[in-house]
Image (tube, rainbow, N blue to C red; front, side, top):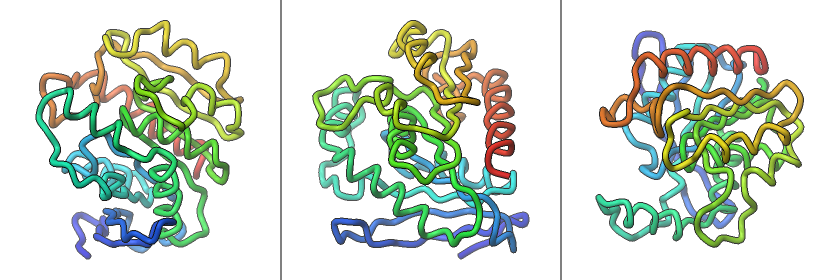
Length: 235
């Protein structure tokens, strides 16, 4: 366990539904044991340095955050090309990953409202987690409305029909992998008090460790939107 600038962070493991020990990173404001809880559904890169920084950023805003390593069961080495990363998604047991996200939240003691936030792959997973119930808010950052690979898991857009808590959906106006028309398909199925917001950017524009994707001014606007939404729904 460590502390930086009033933020308490730690590494832990918890037992998943299949009995496996899943590692996770947590960060929260020091002493705020009843602060709202947020589980972070990571990108395809897992609990990367950037996802850890997301947890710290949420902690600085007054939330308790936890990011579980949903790829802990994947024994294949992570490649560097797109095909290797897509294969990693194909190997992921999506229902198990959703279960890991919800189990991770249980590691942060109640009381306190709970939400999920996810990026890319994690954006879709955060919606699927919210569809299981028990969450008070969900943030989907450029998650695919429909899976591009065959899977037994429901599509995020279909899971929206089972969500009763508000959803904030963040997408890039210039994202070649998720066209605006595809993201717009979410709008009529969003629960009450939800929002779908587009920014002048492409995919993964929030990740400042990927300079080829990061769009600083749009990221600032999107983070302000997300924090405001989470404060409204969870605090």
